[in-house]
Image: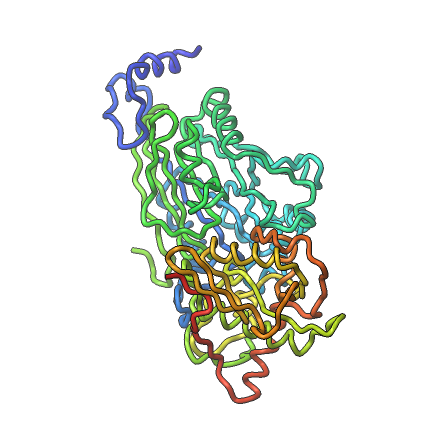
Length: 311
Length: 193
């Protein structure tokens, strides 16, 4: 055991290990490492919305657009050292761009914006698993999923369970979970993809990220949906039934949250859930100030993408 | 994609949590109209009613010019219109589905659910007594999409021969040719008390 790890454990074994807005740190440990700011940016359900909505749209007049999102992200990258850009699935389907170009433009734009990872949504199967496979070479970022078994499909070996990012010494584990495909996606599209319980998959993966990979922040990209009236698994349920997950970045239900939802997880710690509508109208932003495992503060701001210059 | 197909008299927003929307009525009604023209039944029976899903209508329509591209946004999928013949039992499951989900886009259906959950339903032509029903829907739903499992074992499946999106495009163009704007109404097709 390294000296640093030992110090961490010695310091924290007595604490409640709460999640956010935590505990001023002891001067002893803060000498080891100063606060490091990690900026998490995220989108979900962009659905091939490359252009902004027209000005006469009833709900999102003049909002969104990939070029504006790219400038906003670039502006944030100019200001911040440690940025992680993530997407929670359903990149595909929704405008003629997808009908004509089958997702090539979407993946190329995301690559240009330097997305770090993405998970797979149900609509990413809309041109079949072969259609998704065909587009993968246009993406220079990984697709993460822990509860779809692709072993008997063309995607075998191409989808990772998780990825660990190292930002200025802070290890951030990112993994993905997907919605049940049966009854949602035609079987002839997803073929022999096997869905399994996302709660089991999430707990297993988060445990690996926490204990084996020694991640200090663990993020789940979820395409399960924020909440349901039925007992279908949702992000709200996932958060309460798992541990070790700091943040769930959600999608599927096109839920627009003003700020992240706080849920107590199995350990009584706080898991945050954030989701930012759909069609690239918003960019989610969370700022984590990390100085030790499970010891950080977080602030958030979900940004609506308009034609106006951001001050 | 930027060619204007028709002018809409008002906005048709995509709304959640309602038993009936103007957008849903518009698409269900036009699907039935277009399908009735194209459908060549294998017997003498016509279509009784149309059932689609709110989840399949993907965006709002603005007031004013409706472009072909906007129709692609409303209905991006390559779904085909199909006519399913299903039993009375399956129709009962369909009615329960409509109650459970709080309504879906329909045409040719009138359904009232009172505070005790009792349901009064009129499906298609009220003067026909029926042991089976012919329902217009999309092949996505016919294959059990959105858990419409009552469609999974039909007595018969017939293709209409048109994609749902093309039906919308065709209807917009024909309304425009007639000098009409795109209109839709709410008329209490599915009501909960």
